[in-house]
Amino acid sequence: MPTTAAAPTAGLIATGTLALAQPGSQRAATPSGGCRDTSHHGGRYSEWDEQWLQMSIEGDLFEIQGGKLALQKATTPAVKSLGDRLVTDHSKSLQDAVDLAKKLGIRRPTSPSPTQQWELKVVSTFSGTAFDRWYADLEVKDHMQDIDETSEAVDEGCNDEIRALAREDLPMLQQHVQLAQAALGAAGGPPAR
Image (cartoon, rainbow, N blue to C red):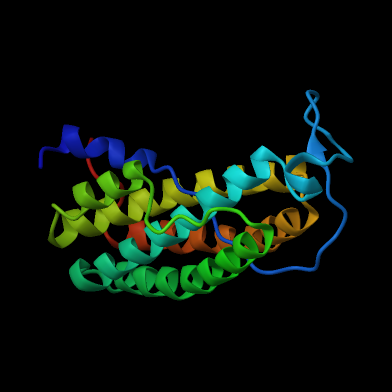
């Protein structure tokens, strides 16, 4: 696939992961971005909470599929190791996110988002060092976005359980960025655009 067609893969849209936490008080978003007591969704979560948790599940599914792809196609040991680590970490976080979604009555996605599916398809067209560079670059950018979205969930979410899960995720996501940056360096740096 030509580089210009593959370049959008770097704009990965996926969110981070979750780890189960204790229940707390429930709030709903106010126009100012804060939360207040409410009966929205039975007082359990706001629309933002629901969207973030669903995006997190899609993101976990994306990371697992991408990690498995890296285990099959990567030629650089650091990229292969990154793929293995992402499969391991995101498999656990997927289970935690699915468990919380089930508990809260939130629909649980069963596949990555259409954009994420497209990104996996595009990156899978590369091989050798080109694959390693595209995959690692994608993971750097993806996890940076995950950190932004997860931080927003911590700051602006209304369900204390979801906020706690997001807060627990941040260190893992930060570590994934570092691993992806190291893998990208080991593979020769960002791909030419």
